[in-house]
Image (cartoon, one colour):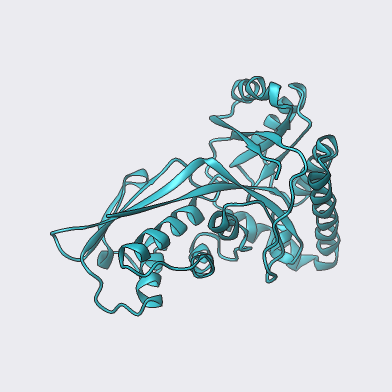
Amino acid sequence: MTSASAPGKIILFGEHAVVYGRPALAVPVTQVQATATVSENSRGGIWIEAPNVNLSSALAQLAPDHPLAAVINSVFSTLAIARPPACTVYLQSTIPVASGLGSGAAVSVAILRALSTYLGRPLTDSQVNGLAFQAEKFYHGTPSGIDNTVVTYARPVYFVKGQPIKTFRVGASFTMVIGDTGISAPTKESVQAVRILWEAHPARWEKVFDRVGEIVWDARQAIERGDTPALGTLMDSNQALLQEMTVSCSELDLLTEAAHKAGALGAKLSGGGRGGNLIVLVLKEKASAMAEALLAAGAKRTIITTVRAR
């Protein structure tokens, strides 16, 4: 029996614009995890047990484009294993689904590592990242690649699609409260909505994406020098542009207002939007009170996470 876990993630800056070649910043959220455990079975074939999504099925019974089937088959294909041994892939996750926390990527990475190790040929980080990116296409249609990259390497990254990943220095630790709207928000749909806007008026939206890219660069510099107040101001600026892209929603806007009333240094959606999560920058000593304020304003759950200086 072998097991592997992978963390969640939040995008700090740059979602949606990252699909169009602009940079984004993202960090792992280790407070939530996806875990895959692979063990032999006596019933034959490959079985998938994923109680979080009410799935119990033989691999052969799933469509080839089912995300879990695709990622499992990608291991066999990569390792050139034509007749894999009978085994069960058991999945558990504390990462909310379709909420911008990288649930799909975390599950894929956990499966890739656990299954390849079980087969005696562990995949490299680079292989895991590449295969997880391919799996992301089943979840998101046109993925940026940021989810699988952050989850695979489990460290803060400055990411530009098609370029080598870059880590960045965190000058001073900062604390964030993640507030979940409870609204399932598949990233594929919001990415497609932005694509429609861009196709209709590319010049206008390229300028918007340029402004997002400038904010991302400024945010990276603020993080590196430990300038938390500046980081909060930049979060608010990024959120305004995300609203312009139509990927916010009334629930996220309500939580944003509540966060600022409770003393947020900055707040913005994280991920695809139209539901999912709000991330709030807050002084560490006010994190618990902020979590309570978000719950009172309608958040279904909260997570307090700290990005550590390094």
